[in-house]
Structures are given as structure tokens and as C-alpha cells.
Length: 276
Image (cartoon, rainbow, N blue to C red; front, side):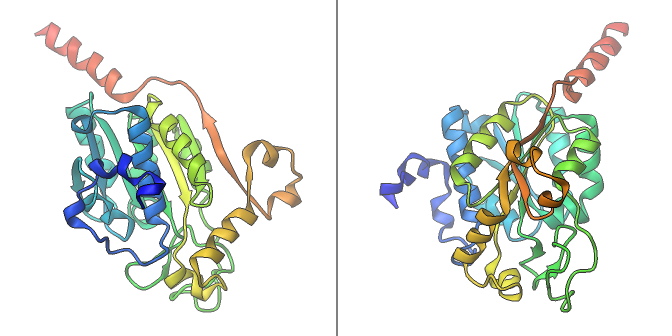
């Protein structure tokens, strides 16, 4: 492990809480390591970082990160993060949560966080199911795929989280996979640096629950699927509509500059104070 550079990020972990609870081969470890490498590259002050999560396999990550962390109620990570950012706008506030927290019970909070363009970074662990509670389908389960609550195949269409984020007003939208581990670090760095609401979806694997029901029963098969079904955003744009049905794009999907919520909020409160 030391040869892979773990020593560079070990000081950012609560090592006394290890070993972690995740299943062997779970992609959550890859995302966690990518996030820590991004923090390292940005040379951020650990005391100026606040991590917020909800409930689920991925949300247990806050137990292992040696920053100020908040483990909130299911689906409420973004409103907690919003309050923290308004109270302490100088902090780097990051939400680490799964598809249930962000796209289901927390979907409305995600939409309004993006609409406000508040300066938080949301990293979505998309493993296409509720892995911790038995493998039920989520709003991101692919059409036709199986879950414990869709034993004959999913008949609902999933959200496209990148299009949802962009449509709601997010000013930085990106997607990666756990196969693209190095590229993921780059995207997280850019998302944290961006001034505004940053949404980074990470396609990851749950081979224990989701994979075994969809002919991807090992971590290697799940990574192979990610490799075979993803294409760079530049190539995706050059594809025909029919070709696009077979793939999903990875990279920066959208980036723009727009007034940021806490800055605009500060202007209003400053005027009110001056009026008094």
C-alpha cells in the first residue's frame, strides 16, 4: 500500500477507524482516495474543509476522513452543507453521498442547491442501487437492469444526473467512473476550485448486490463495464443519436460563470447592516 503512495494521504485519514466497513472490491475506496489526492494536490488546509454526508454505504466515508465531518439524516446532506457554507463561507464544503441521498429522498435539495449556485462540491457515488439496505433499485438504476425490488428488470428510466444538474443551474458539471481513477482526481480538483455549485457524478460498482444480479458479479467485471460503456465527452458529441444510446460521456459536461449564492447573500446582509 505504501508503494501506491498511501503515505502521502494517510495523515488525512482517521486511521484508528480502519479497517473500513465496505465490501472487498467496492468502488467507494477508489473515490475516497481520489478525493484525498485532490485535497493533497490543492494543498488545502484540513482545518478549512468540512465534509457532509447522508445515509448509505458511501456516506460512511465521513468516519474515515480526518476533517470536520457531519453525518446527517438521509437525503439532507445538501441543506446541512448549505447552512454550513452560509455561516462559514471561507470553508471548502464538500458533500459525499450516494444516489439515494442525492437523487431520491434528497433530489429536491440537489435541484435547489444547483439553482442557488451555492459554492459547494457534490460528489455523487452512483452505484445504481441501495447497496446497504439490500440492493433495491434507485432513481439511477439503468433501464432493464435488475434489483431486489425489480427482479424482472427495471421499467423506469433513470435520471441523467449531469443533465439534471445542468438544467437546475449547476455551474460545474462532470462525470467520471472508478475505472478513470486518475481522471477523477483532476475533475475533483477542478470542481473544488470552481466558484459555484459543482456536481461530480462518479459511476461506481456494487458487485455484491447490484453486480451479481446483472452478470457483473465481481469488481473486475464492474470496472470492465465502466471502461466499455464510457467515452470522453468530446467523442460523445461526435456520435450519432443511435451510437450515444450505447455509451455515457465522461469529463467536464458543463462549466460556466454565474453569481455565487453566499457572495450575493453577503451583499444583501451588508446593505441591511448599513441601513441600520
